[in-house]
Length: 284
Ligand SMILES: NC(=O)C1=CN([C@@H]2O[C@H](COP(=O)(O)OP(=O)(O)OC[C@H]3O[C@@H](n4cnc5c(N)ncnc54)[C@H](OP(=O)(O)O)[C@@H]3O)[C@@H](O)[C@H]2O)C=CC1
Ligand SMILES: Nc1nc(O)c(N)c(N[C@@H]2O[C@H](COP(=O)(O)O)[C@@H](O)[C@H]2O)n1
Image 1 (tube, rainbow, N blue to C red):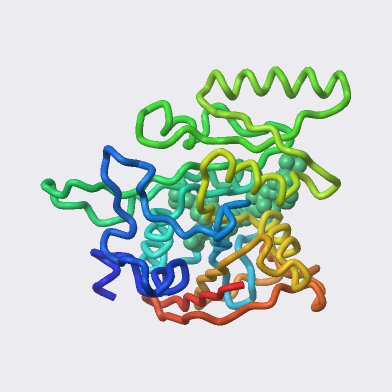
Image 2 (image 1 turned 90 degrees about the vertical axis):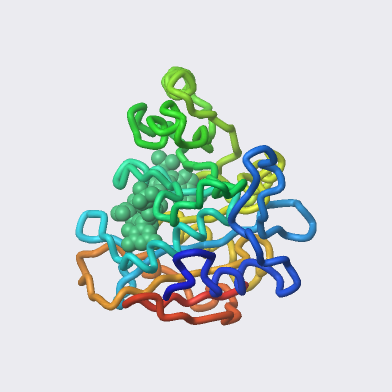
């Protein structure tokens, strides 16, 4: 769709912004005024706006056998994902994805702006959820930051209680910080980093909107945190790209253990055919 080439797709504008928001330059911001970058927000500012998003096959798989990374999105819907990235202050992935995919989480697919355009695309902050600080020191997120083409990655982690484990964690924290990361301590429980605590901390650090890209474990946790009982407390929008392909049962899914009573209530907002894919957007 041609308008995807020069401005954000309608499905994103409809889902992330209210109809009275000024639609010009929604994903652009002045190089001198980062703070003014347009962003979806929640009213009470207790947490960031959260968009949960991923690409899946027809049989609801997000990766291949043993987690093999799959490019499920076609080029048009991948471009849509990069527009979406430009509309959020930060992008979050779990450490499983960071280790497996070594992602960049930037907006490199967006069309080049004319040289005389005073704006540039908003570059989101990468955030990795990593209890045990397993992030590699030579990952692309840190390499890009050191090369001046990415924001400093934030690593959301939790200091262990035991002395031996604590020593390793502190050493790894120093190594990651020396490599350029900012390690942010958050409370954890048996399910890993506490999602509500992490969201509150991110908001206190200035993150107004968070795009959660996966992987499987993170998607499950955010869906579980956004159950019917908790509606409105964790996830604001769900945007799923469905690719016209089957992966098979060896692939990695995210929904196998979801209980019907626990699934969040979805309000359908928009469905759009983007290239060969179908993108479905909901508000929660
Ligand atoms: N198709 C798509 O759109 C996408 C596909 N993927 C695919 O997903 C796969 C990775 O998924 P997965 O291995 O599950 O890894 P995740 O990226 O979901 O990371 C999960 C890990 O994050 C840590 N963690 C800490 N706190 C939490 C919490 N509250 N909830 C969940 N996890 C937490 C845990 O590790 P620890 O205990 O060490 O902290 C956990 O093992 C890859 O194959 C990747 O290619 C990924 C993104 C998008
Ligand atoms: N939208 C989308 N479609 C797919 O088919 C995917 N595999 C993903 N994966 C996510 O994108 C990350 C890679 O990002 P970079 O290209 O390195 O910027 C990957 O880690 C997943 O989070 N997404």
